[in-house]
Length: 414
Image 1 (spheres, helix red, strand yellow):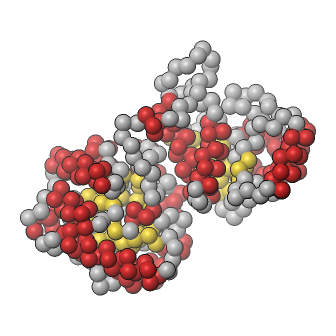
Image 2 (tube, rainbow, N blue to C red):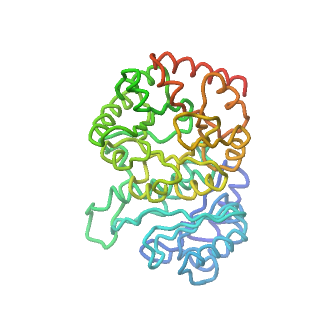
Image 3 (tube, rainbow, N blue to C red):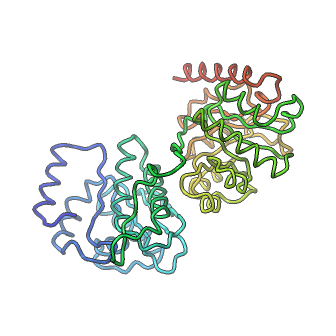
């Protein structure tokens, strides 16, 4: 909120004298309640001096319209036009926020990086407590950039955080005004402290299998506990032959173990079980519920992974709000009926095209894990395994063996 051209000039001079890691400009010109906070001379200073220095600009619809001379913005196509036109002024990235977009069931923002447009969607939270949403989003982007995140990831985290804060704050009543505040302290007040998804969690991704557990006389809970003791960094429950009620009880028991050790627990396919057990997320295939729908059901804080064999599927997973992709099968496996593989070359192609972290899946074990992790693509974060760990008498021992191979592979790759 810059009240004069003199202050804009002073700010720009200071930014030139003391360069920052990343500059996020939230052009506060029109408040959420509709009040004008900057005159025409300020707009000229923004366009001529400040915006060309920005790494990202985050105007709402009214602010984007003002920056472009009052052009009406009423559709997503209009938002794309505005994002491109503002980008032409000079900032490296533009996020046009569409929270006030008429007749939209979703809260749609348009992100433009100079090459591609992305529509970032979230569920629309019906609440009058929206004061400060734009400032919060821009501040969260800045915080994520300071932590080292890439711009796209920072924007996605910020959007999810605002959605979560709005949902948490929707029934708060403070004062007698028509617009209330959102509560930023939801994570401190939550009864369950859930740490954010970290791509390094994918390093040793253990996927259970009910047939193998039965073969070796292991319960689901015992198998998960043993895998964690051996060093598994994330657990997925893929239990195709277990009754729903038994699966739910097992998931709740596994979640207690995972929480103690700080290991995320995901459910394969079954969003109902993930919701009922409060698991950390789900992993879904191409024939399952779209990630975009899963995100609406699960909310902004849960982890969503998607199986992808092609670059196109990987790009769609990103657009739909997934957190990571599982790519494969890399090698033949006896856990899938459709045993079509993509090989190391296919895996590398998917990794290079993906904007999300990748875990390799399919037929991976101690003998070939080093070849997989040695591909030299930075977003390949780990391997997902089933029989290598669970089709064995001692799950913890086999997990330790594979963990050592992965660690050694990482040393060689670096």
